[in-house]
Image 1: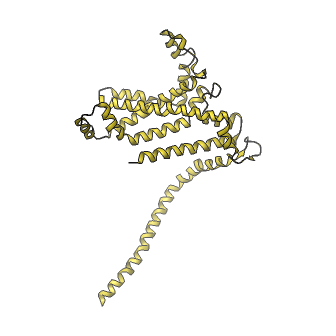
Image 2: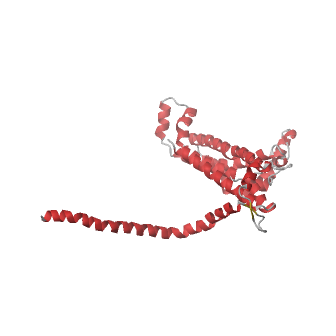
Image 3: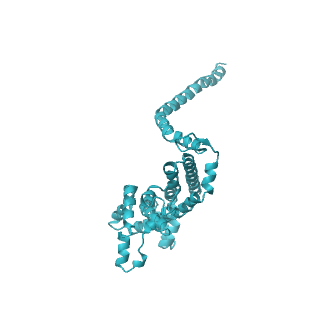
Length: 310
């Protein structure tokens, strides 16, 4: 009889203890939120609130001074129908090749060669190629603006070897201005991709390379069978950062060409700046910013989902 009463009493003891555990967990969560609150409030004030304001402004026609006029989705339709703004999307597609695809390809090849060579002095090459990452974009833009000048080093080198006909004002040419700016982006992002891939290749197990060599794999097959799959995460990171860099390209272009000649090098970021400050149309600038933010987020999520699939 006493054992039956003791067993019956046990659930009651457990029922009393459970609220204590749940209350302890609530206190722990509350403490964590209190510690995170300053950072969350700062993030909301600096990032979330301006984003909501930009979204609100995108539905108005406003020059920043006079009263705003509600226009609904007109600013968004203008962005996709205006020929000048449409050309900015075409320019971005060209920059994607120079800012993203070309640096990633060159970075993979360079990382494979450096990791296989394993000779002294390779750290110097890595430092040289990574140098653009520690330089400000303003310095890089001014440097290349001087190099691309009609009397700059590039044209002088062409004249010195008898290729005078190829010398031109690279940044003032309607055909060559965009590729010239794109090559600046290639030089800037190539070193980052290479160092990222070298660090990723160092984490690949040597046993995989030995197994590939035992199966008769040469350097090329070894690269595609072992190195490339092993760098899947690093490629996703490099692709995300370089693609978004191409979509947000502003400083290099503004300092070198200001979107010219004409609109041959104008990007959405340059169009946003001009709409906000040159010919004030804050609503149109906000709409461009919202579209590009959504596009960058969608691309980042898509790359992440694809890279995580087995």
